[in-house]
Image (cartoon, rainbow, N blue to C red; front, side, top):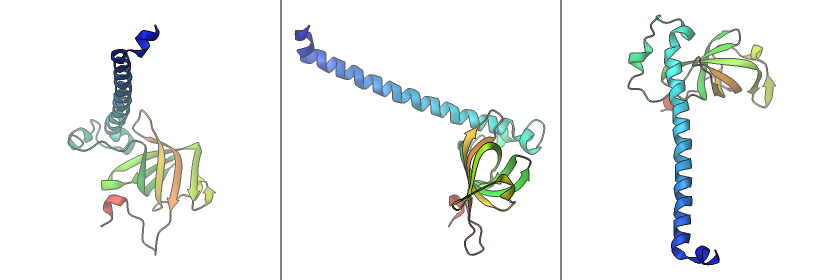
Length: 160
């Protein structure tokens, strides 16, 4: 057995198998994350008409065909509507996202923790959360961004 372990060919074969195993594991993780992101984009477009009272058949199928994948885990933008525990946030490229605020959602304004009642339409926020099957983002953390010099904070893609 010791001779087998000292054999250079055996050592190279074992090392190659380990490298292959790590590569396959990384590939598997990447495929899983990609599937999750694509699933969110599909759920979001499939449920757009339910979330935003659009046409019954949904018009996002055609519009989203050539678009890149939508960020499933958050948004940076301005609150345009507050309805119960749901916020509608207008984000990058004027894409509106529906945010669900739960009992465990942490909401910060500066260094203070505030409540959902302290949020108002036109507040600029950053939301970090998790997508659900309805194409909504269940917020884990909401950070209210200050307006600088009376000007609203723009999403990074709109800053020129």
